[in-house]
Length: 199
Image 1 (cartoon, rainbow, N blue to C red):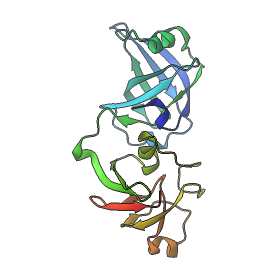
Image 2 (image 1 turned 180 degrees about the vertical axis):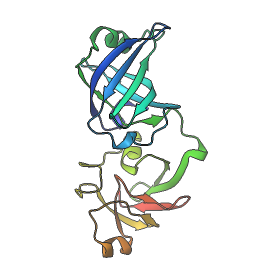
Image 3 (image 1 turned 45 degrees about the vertical axis):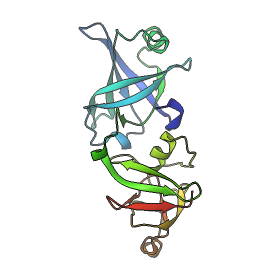
């Protein structure tokens, strides 16, 4: 995964603690917590960017929905420049940037539906629990989003074919029934099917 392919979101370091094995745990507060709701911490990772611009890949080890917190683990065995930078810089009260959560690997049984991009003919698998917009960013395809709650209409996209499961509050009911447009930040295709977008 390339670090520039997902939208960066702010995180506030509430606590830095030392692990028995010599690494560190960072307890992070996330003002934007939507993508972490209901998240299992098993096998889920985020990218973390240091103030100096290094990007590293770390596992989430716990999620506290009530407090909008996640805890990530930084292993002392990782001697990359980014990790060295984190050990020196990251302290409580620092504001950092992280990506949305993603799986270390996308297996075939993780795939929910497919999106075909009409302008290039490329078909992309959309995993369960991941939005169309974030998946497109993973493939280095630029998309415009803003609220990412299906409210603002920034990510309005024309749909050429396929069955849409609308989850936004922006479109009127008659627009949803027409099945010819969608908000790609929250809405999805019917599981196991392919929807074709005018992208």
